[in-house]
Image (tube, rainbow, N blue to C red; front, top):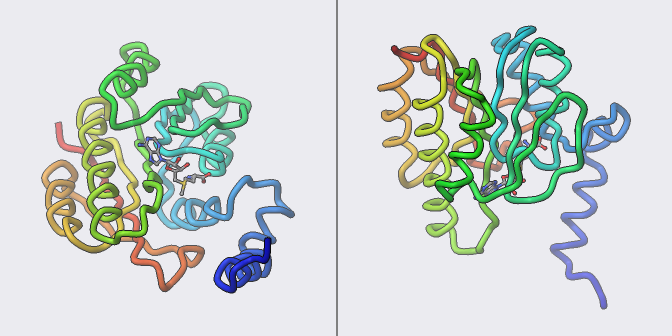
Length: 206
Ligand SMILES: C[S@@+](CC[C@H](N)C(=O)[O-])C[C@H]1O[C@@H](n2cnc3c(N)ncnc32)[C@H](O)[C@@H]1O
């Protein structure tokens, strides 16, 4: 079957993307590794011994970045609706984060410990209807924030991907109520045409 013009263009852009090429060279499973690496370079969020949750983790490049930084004294718990190939030092739970039982299983995996950092790079499958996709995305952000409120230690941090649009300002306010320090990050590896930004909440209130 002939490839449509738009899928050929996407494939060409993907293959020529310097971050894709770099990810292949450096052994990262996705180009998104460079978004997190740039943020970490600036914000130094991860240290040895930390407990980190990675929501929407597949194929696993963020976990690949974080696991060596937290080291054997730390813990990385990753979750995704999709399968993820195992990674050394990363506990993985496959499930739909919108289901309460999945969130509860993740909490149980912390064995009563508080987390230091919650990462969420979750983005829903694109339906093609912008308003539906935006609503689904904001719902995942809200669920991630609920979990952060529940499991983060006071002083902990959260980094979450947000698509700017309907609901994103309200979500920013919800985050500001939990994190007195709130920053916006748009790393270079995040395509300029994408409405995607990352909100970084620091110093979680008691
Ligand atoms: C952009 S990808 C994450 C890439 C990842 N940070 C990495 O560096 O490899 C977004 C992920 O969110 C996941 N996702 C979307 N909806 C989800 C849901 N309801 N529950 C759990 N994961 C979900 C997708 O399956 C996808 O793997």
